[in-house]
Length: 477
Image (cartoon, rainbow, N blue to C red; front, side, top):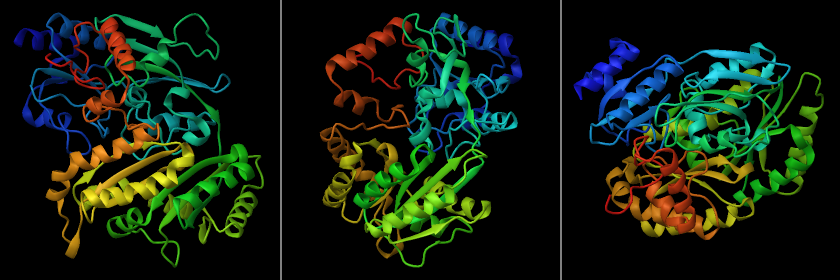
């Protein structure tokens, strides 16, 4: 492989072909610390032309390529397998905001631009890029596009695929498809842009994107709301949709176990309510500078919720600092779970009308599999997406992580079976990666899997782009 490495050094410069263990290590493990692999090298191109040359060289050497952005994924989709034969293609040097057009409502960026920087560039032009994730300070647009990321504003603005107009993609043979067109209407054949969104780097390497911008929403009305049950949260959602309409931007849910972890491990976190509740909702209305009445609409919603028995208490943000404190309770959940110990993560979508029954039944079922297991449940109830994570039992305050790991397969199977029974999805916004590829194939029809394999083979016949991700290897291969 020395010839390949020499060629890659010629393309990107010797300083950007990393082979030393100390330099490569951070690229071989994902954010969770669970998914680890080994890379032949990490290559850091600075332009689309360099990406194309790197991919072309790897194709000629029949060397697998693993595209990687901010490496904040949760399902192992951006790290290599354990063979040590793959080149990790890190796009983090590609951080140029190429163009902002506030009149057309578009921003064109390199794939390595950090999400927070896209938001900032849009704000500087008086516009809004609405995608918001807990990892927005380190995740990149390329990774967001590759996984069709969701976030806390999906209820109003939709998933990533609804925020992209055009892409630039390096194909598995090194050719470049320039689809960077910011057109709202382009009815000239297959929608290739949407083919690559959510493909997790298995069909091509996204190097640039034209994204949609929206009117800025400087006004907010935010509340942390205690609700007795998931059923009451769903009832409150219906009220919020009726009362707030298009201003309803966020409707997040969290159980008491999730809040307890945040209060225990997040510095400065304070419970904003006097009495504990089994469940909570973070609701936010957002509007433009001319939108008046958001506070009144929120107060009216909460009053109706109390009258209906769906709300038992609420803390309303009275300023930016208070709003930030309420948001920290929700956004801190994923991080503090790592502090607590081993975590078994699930990212599922269910029909909203079935959320309450599913959650109640699932809690009982999991206790049969592993008594004392602690569901840490939170997510985006407005679109039926729950992060149904599990922490180990902790009698006497000592987390039994080994018990959780031993029961992981049975716990995940129970959850996936229950999701499939409700015609839901076992991956809502995190992708399949390496973790869920086999499980997803097992729950999909043979026709669907065959179609996916046909698309993969058509674009990447040698299977060199992110092998083992999204689709499991064929039996015997």
